[in-house]
Image (cartoon, rainbow, N blue to C red; front, side, top):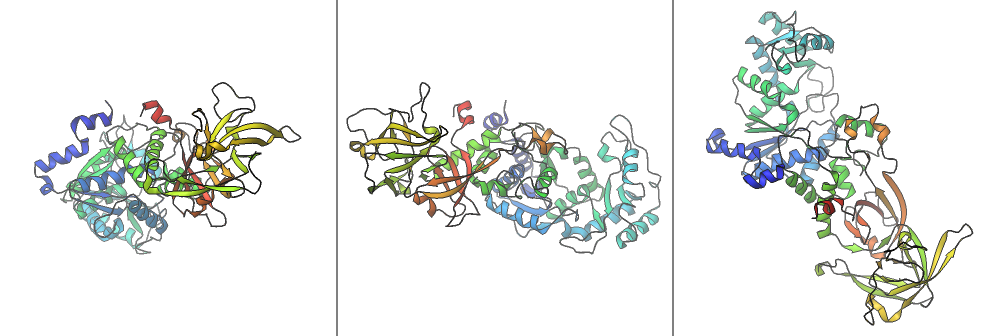
Length: 561
Protein backbone atom coordinates (compact mmCIF):
# COMPACT_ATOMS: atom_id res chain seq x y z
CA UNK A 1 0.00 0.00 0.00
CA UNK A 2 1.38 3.41 -0.92
CA UNK A 3 1.72 6.11 1.69
CA UNK A 4 -1.01 8.10 -0.08
CA UNK A 5 -3.34 5.09 0.08
CA UNK A 6 -2.52 4.60 3.75
CA UNK A 7 -3.34 8.22 4.52
CA UNK A 8 -6.66 7.96 2.72
CA UNK A 9 -7.53 4.78 4.65
CA UNK A 10 -6.63 6.04 8.12
CA UNK A 11 -7.50 9.69 7.59
CA UNK A 12 -4.04 10.83 8.69
CA UNK A 13 -0.33 10.11 8.36
CA UNK A 14 1.73 8.37 11.06
CA UNK A 15 3.14 11.62 12.48
CA UNK A 16 -0.25 13.19 12.95
CA UNK A 17 -1.49 9.89 14.38
CA UNK A 18 1.31 10.10 16.96
CA UNK A 19 0.44 13.71 17.79
CA UNK A 20 -3.24 12.76 18.14
CA UNK A 21 -2.24 10.07 20.62
CA UNK A 22 -0.08 12.49 22.59
CA UNK A 23 -2.92 15.01 22.72
CA UNK A 24 -5.38 12.37 23.89
CA UNK A 25 -2.99 11.40 26.67
CA UNK A 26 -2.43 15.02 27.67
CA UNK A 27 1.27 14.86 26.90
CA UNK A 28 2.83 18.31 26.52
CA UNK A 29 -0.46 19.69 27.90
CA UNK A 30 -1.92 18.92 24.46
CA UNK A 31 0.29 21.61 22.91
CA UNK A 32 1.82 21.25 19.46
CA UNK A 33 5.00 23.19 18.84
CA UNK A 34 7.27 22.24 15.94
CA UNK A 35 10.35 23.80 14.39
CA UNK A 36 12.17 23.98 11.07
CA UNK A 37 15.93 23.97 11.80
CA UNK A 38 18.02 24.51 8.62
CA UNK A 39 21.77 24.95 8.59
CA UNK A 40 22.68 28.30 6.98
CA UNK A 41 25.36 26.71 4.77
CA UNK A 42 23.48 26.68 1.46
CA UNK A 43 20.17 27.43 -0.21
CA UNK A 44 17.06 25.38 0.51
CA UNK A 45 16.03 22.79 -2.09
CA UNK A 46 12.88 20.84 -2.96
CA UNK A 47 13.71 18.26 -0.28
CA UNK A 48 13.56 20.99 2.37
CA UNK A 49 10.15 21.99 1.02
CA UNK A 50 8.73 18.69 2.26
CA UNK A 51 10.06 19.38 5.77
CA UNK A 52 8.83 22.98 5.70
CA UNK A 53 5.33 21.95 4.62
CA UNK A 54 5.28 19.19 7.23
CA UNK A 55 6.46 21.22 10.22
CA UNK A 56 4.54 24.39 9.44
CA UNK A 57 1.55 22.40 8.21
CA UNK A 58 1.29 20.37 11.41
CA UNK A 59 1.50 23.52 13.52
CA UNK A 60 -1.32 25.04 11.47
CA UNK A 61 -3.47 21.89 11.64
CA UNK A 62 -3.29 21.81 15.44
CA UNK A 63 -3.44 25.58 16.05
CA UNK A 64 0.11 25.33 17.32
CA UNK A 65 3.38 27.11 16.68
CA UNK A 66 6.36 26.49 14.42
CA UNK A 67 9.75 28.08 15.01
CA UNK A 68 12.36 28.92 12.40
CA UNK A 69 15.71 28.13 13.99
CA UNK A 70 19.06 28.32 12.26
CA UNK A 71 21.46 25.56 13.27
CA UNK A 72 24.49 27.83 13.04
CA UNK A 73 27.10 25.74 14.87
CA UNK A 74 29.68 25.52 12.06
CA UNK A 75 30.97 29.05 11.31
CA UNK A 76 33.36 27.83 8.61
CA UNK A 77 30.50 27.02 6.20
CA UNK A 78 27.82 29.54 7.23
CA UNK A 79 26.94 32.90 5.72
CA UNK A 80 24.29 35.59 6.17
CA UNK A 81 23.47 35.17 2.45
CA UNK A 82 22.08 31.74 3.29
CA UNK A 83 20.22 33.07 6.33
CA UNK A 84 18.47 35.67 4.18
CA UNK A 85 17.66 33.23 1.37
CA UNK A 86 16.15 30.69 3.77
CA UNK A 87 13.82 33.28 5.27
CA UNK A 88 12.74 34.36 1.78
CA UNK A 89 12.06 30.76 0.72
CA UNK A 90 9.96 29.94 3.79
CA UNK A 91 7.83 33.04 3.22
CA UNK A 92 7.55 32.32 -0.51
CA UNK A 93 6.19 28.85 0.24
CA UNK A 94 3.46 30.59 2.22
CA UNK A 95 4.50 30.09 5.83
CA UNK A 96 5.30 32.38 8.75
CA UNK A 97 7.28 31.32 11.80
CA UNK A 98 6.18 32.00 15.35
CA UNK A 99 7.70 35.07 16.97
CA UNK A 100 11.31 36.01 16.32
CA UNK A 101 13.77 33.93 14.37
CA UNK A 102 15.81 31.63 16.58
CA UNK A 103 19.47 30.72 16.24
CA UNK A 104 21.37 27.91 17.91
CA UNK A 105 24.01 30.57 18.58
CA UNK A 106 21.46 32.34 20.81
CA UNK A 107 22.04 29.48 23.24
CA UNK A 108 25.84 29.22 23.12
CA UNK A 109 26.25 30.50 26.68
CA UNK A 110 23.63 28.09 27.99
CA UNK A 111 25.07 25.21 25.96
CA UNK A 112 28.50 25.86 27.44
CA UNK A 113 27.06 25.88 30.96
CA UNK A 114 25.34 22.56 30.31
CA UNK A 115 28.53 21.07 28.87
CA UNK A 116 30.30 21.98 32.10
CA UNK A 117 27.39 20.43 34.01
CA UNK A 118 27.91 17.16 32.12
CA UNK A 119 31.58 17.24 33.12
CA UNK A 120 30.66 17.87 36.76
CA UNK A 121 28.27 14.90 36.66
CA UNK A 122 31.06 12.70 35.30
CA UNK A 123 29.34 12.33 31.93
CA UNK A 124 31.78 14.19 29.67
CA UNK A 125 35.55 14.40 29.29
CA UNK A 126 38.21 16.20 27.27
CA UNK A 127 39.89 13.88 24.79
CA UNK A 128 43.18 14.49 22.97
CA UNK A 129 42.82 11.77 20.36
CA UNK A 130 42.79 13.19 16.83
CA UNK A 131 39.92 12.56 14.43
CA UNK A 132 41.53 9.49 12.85
CA UNK A 133 42.29 7.98 16.22
CA UNK A 134 38.75 8.59 17.45
CA UNK A 135 37.43 6.73 14.40
CA UNK A 136 39.88 3.89 15.02
CA UNK A 137 38.92 3.62 18.70
CA UNK A 138 35.22 3.69 17.88
CA UNK A 139 35.14 0.11 16.59
CA UNK A 140 32.81 -1.32 13.98
CA UNK A 141 29.27 -2.62 13.67
CA UNK A 142 30.51 -6.05 14.79
CA UNK A 143 33.30 -5.04 17.20
CA UNK A 144 33.02 -2.80 20.28
CA UNK A 145 35.11 0.32 20.56
CA UNK A 146 38.06 0.95 22.86
CA UNK A 147 38.06 3.53 25.62
CA UNK A 148 40.12 6.66 25.06
CA UNK A 149 43.21 6.87 27.32
CA UNK A 150 41.83 10.25 28.43
CA UNK A 151 38.39 8.91 29.38
CA UNK A 152 38.99 8.66 33.12
CA UNK A 153 40.41 12.10 33.78
CA UNK A 154 39.16 13.75 36.94
CA UNK A 155 36.29 16.22 36.87
CA UNK A 156 38.70 18.98 37.89
CA UNK A 157 41.14 18.24 35.06
CA UNK A 158 38.35 18.07 32.52
CA UNK A 159 36.89 21.38 33.68
CA UNK A 160 40.30 23.04 33.53
CA UNK A 161 41.02 21.78 30.01
CA UNK A 162 37.55 22.62 28.74
CA UNK A 163 37.82 26.16 30.08
CA UNK A 164 41.21 26.53 28.45
CA UNK A 165 39.71 25.25 25.19
CA UNK A 166 37.13 28.00 25.50
CA UNK A 167 39.87 30.56 26.22
CA UNK A 168 41.59 29.68 22.94
CA UNK A 169 44.76 28.07 24.32
CA UNK A 170 44.69 25.08 21.97
CA UNK A 171 44.75 24.64 18.21
CA UNK A 172 41.90 23.35 16.07
CA UNK A 173 41.62 19.58 16.41
CA UNK A 174 43.99 19.38 19.37
CA UNK A 175 41.20 18.48 21.81
CA UNK A 176 37.48 17.77 21.85
CA UNK A 177 34.86 17.33 24.53
CA UNK A 178 33.18 13.92 24.37
CA UNK A 179 30.11 12.55 26.10
CA UNK A 180 30.97 9.63 28.38
CA UNK A 181 28.44 6.96 27.44
CA UNK A 182 29.33 3.42 26.32
CA UNK A 183 32.14 2.36 23.98
CA UNK A 184 30.48 -1.05 23.59
CA UNK A 185 27.06 0.28 22.61
CA UNK A 186 25.51 -1.46 19.57
CA UNK A 187 24.64 2.06 18.37
CA UNK A 188 27.99 3.46 17.23
CA UNK A 189 26.70 7.01 17.69
CA UNK A 190 26.57 6.34 21.45
CA UNK A 191 30.26 5.43 21.66
CA UNK A 192 31.39 8.60 23.39
CA UNK A 193 30.37 11.09 20.68
CA UNK A 194 32.08 14.46 20.34
CA UNK A 195 29.92 17.27 21.69
CA UNK A 196 32.35 20.24 21.41
CA UNK A 197 35.29 20.94 19.10
CA UNK A 198 37.83 23.72 18.84
CA UNK A 199 37.31 26.02 15.89
CA UNK A 200 39.05 29.38 15.66
CA UNK A 201 36.63 30.92 13.18
CA UNK A 202 34.57 34.08 12.90
CA UNK A 203 30.86 33.42 13.45
CA UNK A 204 28.28 35.35 11.40
CA UNK A 205 26.34 36.22 14.56
CA UNK A 206 28.65 35.94 17.59
CA UNK A 207 31.77 37.28 15.90
CA UNK A 208 35.03 36.14 17.53
CA UNK A 209 33.62 35.46 20.98
CA UNK A 210 33.94 31.69 20.79
CA UNK A 211 36.89 29.41 20.12
CA UNK A 212 34.83 26.28 20.64
CA UNK A 213 31.53 25.30 19.05
CA UNK A 214 28.99 22.65 20.04
CA UNK A 215 28.17 19.74 17.76
CA UNK A 216 24.74 19.33 16.18
CA UNK A 217 23.60 16.38 18.32
CA UNK A 218 24.35 18.24 21.53
CA UNK A 219 22.93 21.55 20.31
CA UNK A 220 19.75 20.41 18.64
CA UNK A 221 18.05 18.59 21.48
CA UNK A 222 18.90 21.33 24.00
CA UNK A 223 17.64 24.03 21.60
CA UNK A 224 14.38 22.08 21.22
CA UNK A 225 14.14 21.86 25.00
CA UNK A 226 14.80 25.56 25.58
CA UNK A 227 12.15 26.55 23.00
CA UNK A 228 9.51 24.22 24.41
CA UNK A 229 9.24 22.18 21.21
CA UNK A 230 6.84 19.26 21.58
CA UNK A 231 7.55 17.21 18.46
CA UNK A 232 10.99 17.39 16.88
CA UNK A 233 10.33 16.09 13.38
CA UNK A 234 13.38 15.13 11.32
CA UNK A 235 14.41 12.82 8.50
CA UNK A 236 15.26 9.17 8.90
CA UNK A 237 19.04 9.60 8.79
CA UNK A 238 18.69 10.92 12.36
CA UNK A 239 16.88 7.81 13.61
CA UNK A 240 20.00 6.42 15.30
CA UNK A 241 20.73 9.88 16.72
CA UNK A 242 17.46 9.80 18.65
CA UNK A 243 19.13 7.70 21.36
CA UNK A 244 21.72 10.44 21.85
CA UNK A 245 19.00 13.12 21.71
CA UNK A 246 17.26 11.36 24.59
CA UNK A 247 20.49 10.68 26.51
CA UNK A 248 21.61 14.33 26.57
CA UNK A 249 18.26 15.59 27.83
CA UNK A 250 17.97 12.84 30.43
CA UNK A 251 21.57 13.27 31.59
CA UNK A 252 20.91 16.96 32.23
CA UNK A 253 17.36 16.54 33.59
CA UNK A 254 15.92 18.87 30.93
CA UNK A 255 12.44 19.21 29.46
CA UNK A 256 12.14 16.45 26.86
CA UNK A 257 10.49 16.86 23.42
CA UNK A 258 9.71 13.82 21.27
CA UNK A 259 11.82 13.20 18.16
CA UNK A 260 9.95 11.59 15.25
CA UNK A 261 11.61 10.61 11.96
CA UNK A 262 10.16 10.47 8.45
CA UNK A 263 11.52 9.50 5.04
CA UNK A 264 13.13 12.38 3.23
CA UNK A 265 12.22 13.34 -0.32
CA UNK A 266 14.25 11.81 -3.15
CA UNK A 267 13.53 12.75 -6.77
CA UNK A 268 14.65 11.25 -10.05
CA UNK A 269 17.06 13.33 -12.17
CA UNK A 270 17.89 15.52 -9.18
CA UNK A 271 20.92 16.01 -6.95
CA UNK A 272 19.92 17.06 -3.42
CA UNK A 273 23.27 16.72 -1.66
CA UNK A 274 24.07 20.20 -0.42
CA UNK A 275 27.78 19.47 -0.73
CA UNK A 276 27.38 18.60 -4.40
CA UNK A 277 25.09 21.57 -5.06
CA UNK A 278 27.76 23.85 -3.59
CA UNK A 279 30.28 22.20 -5.91
CA UNK A 280 28.07 22.94 -8.92
CA UNK A 281 27.76 26.61 -7.91
CA UNK A 282 31.36 27.26 -6.89
CA UNK A 283 32.82 25.58 -9.98
CA UNK A 284 30.58 27.32 -12.48
CA UNK A 285 28.57 24.34 -13.70
CA UNK A 286 25.47 26.46 -13.10
CA UNK A 287 24.90 30.21 -13.00
CA UNK A 288 24.32 30.36 -9.23
CA UNK A 289 22.02 28.98 -6.55
CA UNK A 290 18.99 30.37 -8.38
CA UNK A 291 19.88 28.85 -11.74
CA UNK A 292 16.53 27.47 -12.99
CA UNK A 293 18.14 24.04 -13.51
CA UNK A 294 18.92 23.79 -9.80
CA UNK A 295 16.53 21.98 -7.41
CA UNK A 296 16.78 24.91 -5.00
CA UNK A 297 13.58 26.73 -4.13
CA UNK A 298 15.09 29.93 -5.51
CA UNK A 299 15.92 28.12 -8.75
CA UNK A 300 12.44 26.61 -9.03
CA UNK A 301 10.90 30.01 -8.27
CA UNK A 302 12.96 31.65 -11.01
CA UNK A 303 12.00 28.88 -13.42
CA UNK A 304 8.33 29.61 -12.78
CA UNK A 305 7.26 26.93 -10.30
CA UNK A 306 4.59 28.19 -7.92
CA UNK A 307 4.43 27.72 -4.14
CA UNK A 308 0.92 26.34 -4.53
CA UNK A 309 2.20 23.62 -6.87
CA UNK A 310 5.04 22.67 -4.52
CA UNK A 311 2.75 22.56 -1.49
CA UNK A 312 0.29 20.41 -3.42
CA UNK A 313 3.13 18.11 -4.50
CA UNK A 314 4.28 17.69 -0.88
CA UNK A 315 0.71 17.01 0.24
CA UNK A 316 0.17 14.39 -2.46
CA UNK A 317 3.38 12.44 -1.79
CA UNK A 318 2.64 12.49 1.95
CA UNK A 319 5.01 11.31 4.70
CA UNK A 320 6.12 7.81 5.58
CA UNK A 321 8.94 5.98 7.34
CA UNK A 322 10.53 4.84 4.09
CA UNK A 323 14.20 5.69 3.70
CA UNK A 324 14.85 4.99 0.04
CA UNK A 325 11.61 5.87 -1.73
CA UNK A 326 12.11 7.92 -4.88
CA UNK A 327 9.45 10.14 -6.46
CA UNK A 328 9.37 10.49 -10.23
CA UNK A 329 10.18 14.08 -11.22
CA UNK A 330 7.34 13.85 -13.73
CA UNK A 331 4.93 13.93 -10.80
CA UNK A 332 6.33 17.25 -9.59
CA UNK A 333 5.93 18.61 -13.12
CA UNK A 334 2.37 17.29 -13.21
CA UNK A 335 1.57 19.32 -10.07
CA UNK A 336 3.15 22.40 -11.64
CA UNK A 337 1.13 22.00 -14.84
CA UNK A 338 -2.03 21.42 -12.85
CA UNK A 339 -1.67 24.78 -11.11
CA UNK A 340 -0.31 26.77 -14.05
CA UNK A 341 -3.17 25.54 -16.23
CA UNK A 342 -5.63 27.31 -13.96
CA UNK A 343 -3.76 30.61 -13.51
CA UNK A 344 -1.90 31.43 -16.73
CA UNK A 345 -3.06 33.44 -19.73
CA UNK A 346 -2.49 31.95 -23.19
CA UNK A 347 -0.51 33.74 -25.86
CA UNK A 348 1.22 32.80 -29.09
CA UNK A 349 4.95 32.66 -29.71
CA UNK A 350 7.09 30.80 -32.23
CA UNK A 351 10.35 29.27 -31.00
CA UNK A 352 11.74 27.93 -34.30
CA UNK A 353 10.22 30.10 -37.03
CA UNK A 354 9.64 29.40 -40.66
CA UNK A 355 8.29 32.26 -42.79
CA UNK A 356 4.87 32.03 -44.40
CA UNK A 357 3.72 34.41 -47.15
CA UNK A 358 -0.03 34.52 -47.82
CA UNK A 359 -0.23 35.34 -51.50
CA UNK A 360 -3.93 36.26 -51.53
CA UNK A 361 -3.59 38.77 -48.69
CA UNK A 362 -2.66 42.40 -49.44
CA UNK A 363 0.93 43.52 -48.86
CA UNK A 364 -0.16 46.53 -46.82
CA UNK A 365 -3.23 44.89 -45.37
CA UNK A 366 -3.48 44.05 -41.65
CA UNK A 367 -6.19 43.36 -39.13
CA UNK A 368 -6.57 42.52 -35.47
CA UNK A 369 -8.34 39.57 -33.94
CA UNK A 370 -9.91 39.83 -30.49
CA UNK A 371 -8.61 36.66 -28.78
CA UNK A 372 -9.33 35.30 -25.28
CA UNK A 373 -6.47 35.23 -22.79
CA UNK A 374 -7.86 32.03 -21.29
CA UNK A 375 -10.16 29.76 -23.31
CA UNK A 376 -11.97 28.50 -20.19
CA UNK A 377 -12.09 31.63 -18.04
CA UNK A 378 -13.60 34.79 -19.50
CA UNK A 379 -12.48 36.82 -16.47
CA UNK A 380 -8.96 36.95 -17.95
CA UNK A 381 -10.30 39.15 -20.74
CA UNK A 382 -8.97 39.38 -24.28
CA UNK A 383 -6.08 40.83 -26.24
CA UNK A 384 -5.69 42.15 -29.79
CA UNK A 385 -3.60 39.89 -32.04
CA UNK A 386 -2.34 41.44 -35.31
CA UNK A 387 -2.50 39.55 -38.61
CA UNK A 388 -0.66 40.40 -41.83
CA UNK A 389 0.55 38.98 -45.14
CA UNK A 390 3.75 37.48 -43.66
CA UNK A 391 3.61 35.15 -40.67
CA UNK A 392 5.91 32.93 -38.66
CA UNK A 393 4.89 29.38 -37.78
CA UNK A 394 6.81 26.62 -35.98
CA UNK A 395 9.17 24.77 -38.28
CA UNK A 396 7.97 21.39 -37.01
CA UNK A 397 4.38 22.31 -37.88
CA UNK A 398 5.33 21.78 -41.55
CA UNK A 399 6.57 18.67 -43.36
CA UNK A 400 7.19 18.48 -47.05
CA UNK A 401 6.74 14.69 -47.11
CA UNK A 402 4.65 13.90 -44.06
CA UNK A 403 3.89 10.46 -42.63
CA UNK A 404 0.34 9.25 -42.21
CA UNK A 405 -1.69 10.93 -39.45
CA UNK A 406 0.35 14.14 -39.73
CA UNK A 407 -2.46 16.68 -39.54
CA UNK A 408 -0.47 19.89 -39.62
CA UNK A 409 0.74 21.81 -42.67
CA UNK A 410 2.13 20.18 -45.82
CA UNK A 411 1.82 20.93 -49.55
CA UNK A 412 -1.83 20.90 -50.53
CA UNK A 413 -3.11 20.48 -46.97
CA UNK A 414 -5.39 22.92 -45.17
CA UNK A 415 -4.98 23.82 -41.49
CA UNK A 416 -6.60 26.29 -39.12
CA UNK A 417 -4.55 29.27 -38.03
CA UNK A 418 -5.56 29.72 -34.41
CA UNK A 419 -8.26 32.46 -34.14
CA UNK A 420 -7.62 33.61 -37.75
CA UNK A 421 -8.26 31.71 -41.01
CA UNK A 422 -8.09 28.36 -42.74
CA UNK A 423 -4.78 28.23 -44.64
CA UNK A 424 -3.48 25.95 -47.41
CA UNK A 425 0.15 25.46 -48.45
CA UNK A 426 0.70 26.04 -52.18
CA UNK A 427 4.46 26.10 -52.64
CA UNK A 428 7.79 25.60 -50.85
CA UNK A 429 10.79 27.88 -51.39
CA UNK A 430 14.25 26.56 -50.61
CA UNK A 431 17.73 28.05 -50.48
CA UNK A 432 20.74 26.90 -52.50
CA UNK A 433 21.44 24.13 -49.99
CA UNK A 434 17.94 22.76 -50.21
CA UNK A 435 16.79 24.09 -46.85
CA UNK A 436 13.22 25.32 -46.59
CA UNK A 437 13.20 29.07 -46.05
CA UNK A 438 9.63 30.09 -46.93
CA UNK A 439 6.16 28.70 -47.56
CA UNK A 440 3.71 30.21 -50.03
CA UNK A 441 0.14 29.79 -48.80
CA UNK A 442 -3.39 31.04 -49.31
CA UNK A 443 -6.21 31.65 -46.85
CA UNK A 444 -9.95 31.17 -47.21
CA UNK A 445 -11.34 34.68 -46.53
CA UNK A 446 -14.71 33.15 -45.65
CA UNK A 447 -13.12 31.34 -42.68
CA UNK A 448 -12.34 34.52 -40.75
CA UNK A 449 -12.00 33.87 -37.04
CA UNK A 450 -10.99 30.29 -37.74
CA UNK A 451 -14.57 29.19 -38.32
CA UNK A 452 -15.59 26.77 -41.07
CA UNK A 453 -17.71 28.63 -43.68
CA UNK A 454 -19.34 25.51 -45.09
CA UNK A 455 -19.04 22.87 -42.39
CA UNK A 456 -15.87 21.30 -43.74
CA UNK A 457 -13.58 19.86 -41.09
CA UNK A 458 -9.95 20.80 -40.65
CA UNK A 459 -8.02 18.44 -38.39
CA UNK A 460 -4.95 20.57 -37.72
CA UNK A 461 -4.77 23.84 -35.79
CA UNK A 462 -1.44 25.66 -35.51
CA UNK A 463 -0.29 28.85 -33.82
CA UNK A 464 1.40 31.76 -35.55
CA UNK A 465 2.57 35.35 -35.17
CA UNK A 466 2.52 38.24 -37.61
CA UNK A 467 6.11 38.78 -38.82
CA UNK A 468 5.48 42.52 -39.18
CA UNK A 469 4.35 42.90 -35.57
CA UNK A 470 6.32 40.11 -33.87
CA UNK A 471 8.32 40.95 -30.75
CA UNK A 472 11.72 39.21 -30.55
CA UNK A 473 12.23 37.59 -27.16
CA UNK A 474 14.94 35.46 -25.60
CA UNK A 475 13.55 32.04 -24.71
CA UNK A 476 15.60 29.91 -22.33
CA UNK A 477 14.66 26.28 -22.80
CA UNK A 478 15.54 24.36 -19.65
CA UNK A 479 15.73 20.59 -19.28
CA UNK A 480 17.00 18.26 -16.53
CA UNK A 481 20.50 19.11 -15.36
CA UNK A 482 21.04 15.34 -15.12
CA UNK A 483 19.30 12.98 -17.52
CA UNK A 484 19.94 9.80 -15.53
CA UNK A 485 17.41 8.73 -12.90
CA UNK A 486 19.82 8.62 -9.98
CA UNK A 487 22.71 11.10 -10.33
CA UNK A 488 22.94 11.24 -6.53
CA UNK A 489 24.30 7.70 -6.56
CA UNK A 490 27.52 8.80 -8.26
CA UNK A 491 30.74 9.61 -6.43
CA UNK A 492 31.56 13.29 -5.91
CA UNK A 493 34.46 13.25 -8.36
CA UNK A 494 32.35 11.72 -11.13
CA UNK A 495 28.89 13.23 -10.89
CA UNK A 496 29.66 16.38 -12.93
CA UNK A 497 30.51 14.15 -15.91
CA UNK A 498 26.80 13.28 -15.98
CA UNK A 499 25.58 16.84 -16.54
CA UNK A 500 23.23 17.16 -19.48
CA UNK A 501 25.01 19.38 -21.99
CA UNK A 502 21.63 20.34 -23.46
CA UNK A 503 20.09 21.33 -20.12
CA UNK A 504 19.86 24.92 -21.41
CA UNK A 505 19.22 26.08 -24.94
CA UNK A 506 18.77 29.78 -25.68
CA UNK A 507 16.82 30.77 -28.78
CA UNK A 508 15.41 33.96 -30.23
CA UNK A 509 11.68 33.47 -30.44
CA UNK A 510 8.99 35.69 -31.95
CA UNK A 511 5.90 36.56 -29.96
CA UNK A 512 2.69 38.46 -30.38
CA UNK A 513 3.09 42.04 -29.06
CA UNK A 514 0.96 41.53 -25.94
CA UNK A 515 3.58 39.16 -24.52
CA UNK A 516 5.95 42.09 -23.97
CA UNK A 517 3.56 43.57 -21.37
CA UNK A 518 4.31 40.88 -18.78
CA UNK A 519 6.60 41.65 -15.84
CA UNK A 520 9.32 39.72 -14.03
CA UNK A 521 7.96 36.61 -12.34
CA UNK A 522 4.68 36.58 -14.27
CA UNK A 523 3.72 33.32 -15.95
CA UNK A 524 2.12 32.57 -19.29
CA UNK A 525 1.42 29.65 -21.56
CA UNK A 526 2.85 29.75 -25.05
CA UNK A 527 0.01 27.98 -26.83
CA UNK A 528 0.80 24.42 -27.90
CA UNK A 529 4.36 24.69 -26.54
CA UNK A 530 4.95 25.16 -22.82
CA UNK A 531 4.51 27.33 -19.76
CA UNK A 532 6.99 30.19 -19.43
CA UNK A 533 7.97 32.71 -16.77
CA UNK A 534 9.48 36.18 -17.23
CA UNK A 535 13.07 36.00 -15.97
CA UNK A 536 14.85 38.45 -13.69
CA UNK A 537 17.14 39.39 -16.60
CA UNK A 538 14.20 40.60 -18.68
CA UNK A 539 14.02 44.22 -19.82
CA UNK A 540 11.43 46.07 -21.98
CA UNK A 541 14.02 46.16 -24.78
CA UNK A 542 14.88 42.47 -24.42
CA UNK A 543 12.20 40.32 -22.81
CA UNK A 544 13.55 37.04 -21.41
CA UNK A 545 11.30 34.05 -20.76
CA UNK A 546 12.24 30.83 -18.97
CA UNK A 547 10.52 27.62 -19.99
CA UNK A 548 8.96 26.32 -16.79
CA UNK A 549 7.54 23.04 -18.02
CA UNK A 550 6.33 21.66 -21.32
CA UNK A 551 2.69 20.89 -22.01
CA UNK A 552 3.45 17.20 -22.54
CA UNK A 553 2.48 15.39 -19.37
CA UNK A 554 3.89 11.87 -19.23
CA UNK A 555 2.78 11.40 -15.62
CA UNK A 556 -0.87 12.20 -16.33
CA UNK A 557 -0.77 9.92 -19.37
CA UNK A 558 0.75 7.08 -17.36
CA UNK A 559 -1.66 7.47 -14.45
CA UNK A 560 -4.58 8.34 -16.75
CA UNK A 561 -5.21 11.51 -14.75
